[in-house]
Amino acid sequence: THTHTHTPESAMEEVEYEAMVPQRDLGLMDIFVVKVLGCLSAEEVCRLSSVSKKWHQAAKSEILWKEFCTQRWEHKWLPHTNIARNDDKKHWKMLYVDMEIHSKRTEITEKELCEYWWRFQFKMLHGEGQYQYVRFTGSAPLGLLHMEYGYPPLRWSIGKLEAKDQYSSHRGQRTGAQVIFIEHFPGHKVSREEDWRWTIANQYVEMNSI
Image 1 (tube, rainbow, N blue to C red):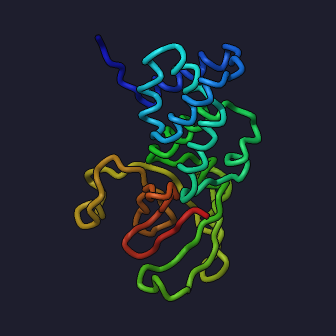
Image 2 (image 1 turned 90 degrees about the vertical axis):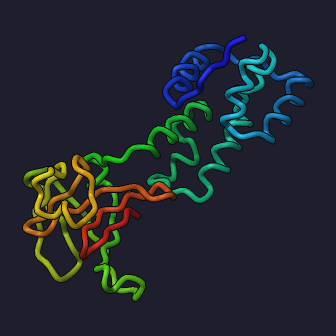
């Protein structure tokens, strides 16, 4: 007897293979098995799919994985509504794995940085409703951050926090962390929230993807 360790990457390889194999129509017993699997977590279903051919077939059910996606994403930030609607018509299991891998990323791309709107707020005013919406445009080193008021367009670039960085000693940031540099201001650390939003912040300001 041996066990399989399911990781997002290994699950993706399995899904890509299964996408090429036509799925049979589910029989009455298969429908019963799908209902049983629906009471489990996605991780448990992946493990049980190796029990038998019948369980493996039922564990590929589009209905099952669509429900897993709906439950998993209920309180998560999805940057595009077409993801939840599955406009690209991907297999729901493949989409689930895609988003799990995406959610674990801790570094943002230039494309994503410029694609989203950001809610900007000074930390000393946090909770007082005083914020503005800002937008990154272009690409480093010629990219600009556009604010609604208070500042002219500001140049930005993406880099890494180095040990010699003058701010690293008192900001608690790890060396090698991704940082957005904006003009002469202290670097802004990039991080992910529990709801999958991106946060860009230094000791003075915070920006959240919206």
